[in-house]
Image 1 (cartoon, helix red, strand yellow):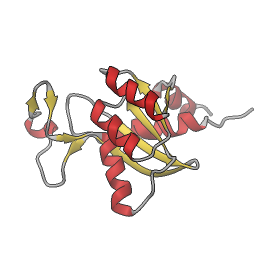
Image 2 (cartoon, helix red, strand yellow):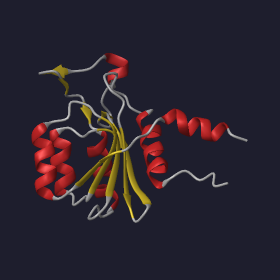
Image 3 (cartoon, rainbow, N blue to C red):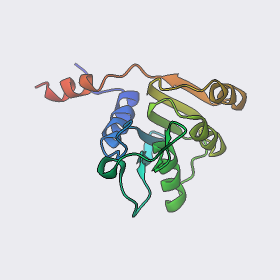
Length: 154
């Protein structure tokens, strides 16, 4: 019997674990950037270094968006930049469909595939840009409880 989880489950589980570090109370999002089946970066949505966190003082909402936080995808991309890891032809696993700005950054970073678990305010223009750019988008059927159940098996 094969007890191994799939690569998609493995990387999506990491994104869900990263989302547990989120400091924005509106939505917990995690992102894992993978190249050649190796994790090169991870991120979650939260405040910039040294700023207050939404979970401590509340969100700073302008036009329906919290402007205090940096999105998980951007944090992961910035981690690659900070440590010199190329994102060309990488994959990104995200707990939620990326917003328009994150989509544009993902495309510009050379990421070839977005795998996501949950729809969230999917932007039509973001979807159009992804099609034009040739980035593959896959919605992963993923339930974190399945991974927990797998861990609890003896």
